[in-house]
Length: 163
Ligand SMILES: [Zn+2]
Image (cartoon, rainbow, N blue to C red; front, side, top):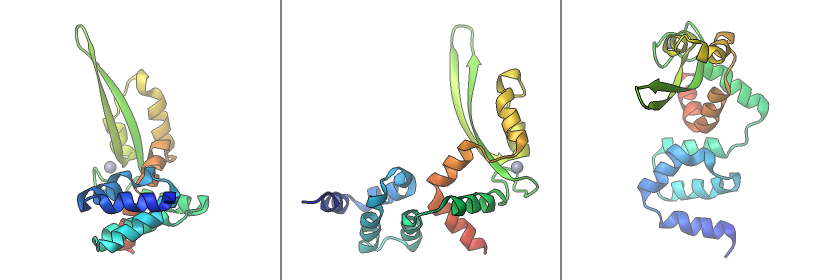
């Protein structure tokens, strides 16, 4: 059995719910050669068109230029927090340490919002100086690029429904 056939066999043994979860949240971690197999499997099961479209857009190769265009278009969408289009969207992954008397609790937070909303949520302390500068510069952060890469299918779909 070839590797492709093994993957095929594995996918066909999974229930719909697992295939859907794979597509919705783990798709960006899959190897490129797996996409056609997954696409065929989603079509065979007649999953919803939205889900099939997500697999399809991940299986299309995206050049650096096309990716930059996608980032630019996505950043112009209204901010998911305040709903305004005044500032471009950016993202930041924050680790906030709260000190109690004997121990500290680390809280991780992913913020996807416009510059203004991110700055409002960022503690204005020296500890966060680098992040504050990063956001003030208004260039896409590595966190934003990762987010877009991972959610490419969903994002392309959102952008399409607008145009
Ligand atoms: Zn905002």
